[in-house]
Length: 90
Image (cartoon, rainbow, N blue to C red; front, side, top):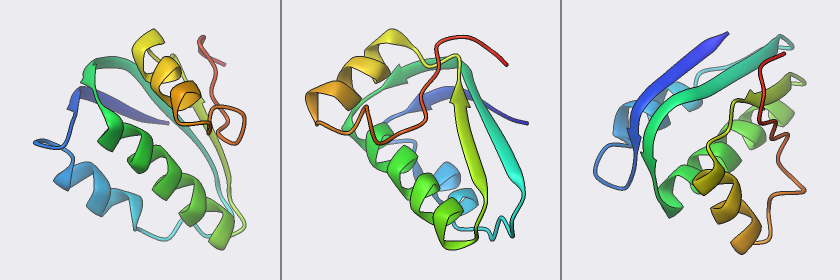
């Protein structure tokens, strides 16, 4: 499980984006967003990048403890149904 904390905004997304590009190679990944304090449209882009990377490497990806504001942003951009978003931990 990968625990993400802090801000997922345009100003802070660099490190997380680089990690998203690491090969997943068929593994199942759970990304826990419970400690995300702030999120903007860049966070939605990051989740989509993680999903594309997982699909490219035949890996299963699941986002848990998604903050309400991030879930709302994904809905606003029309991608909430495409992302494996869950509000509670597995």
